[in-house]
Image (cartoon, rainbow, N blue to C red; front, side, top):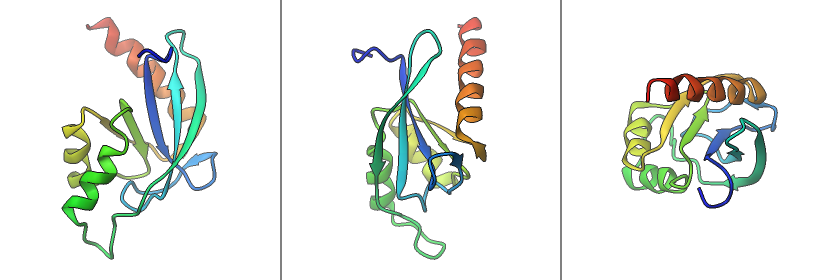
Length: 120
């Protein structure tokens, strides 16, 4: 990436400390940049509309939400439904379900990328 980061990561969080909200219900995502050396930087808070309406989702709203992360390689949320997984995939975004601490989620993602790179 031209901005000095190997990728960007969007994390669904209501409190800035924990991954604690479902992708479809999340209104706030924290965007982190991952450097080649494994360091991460908080870049921005991104506010989006919820697309979960009492158990159903409108396809156009889901697509718009997924598209709002088209500059990110990963989206991490408490839960991500099948429809959202498909929509994110259309933009080349890897969805990850990981409840818990944001720092732990970032650390695990960094370790995953290192292993993934070993296998090309």
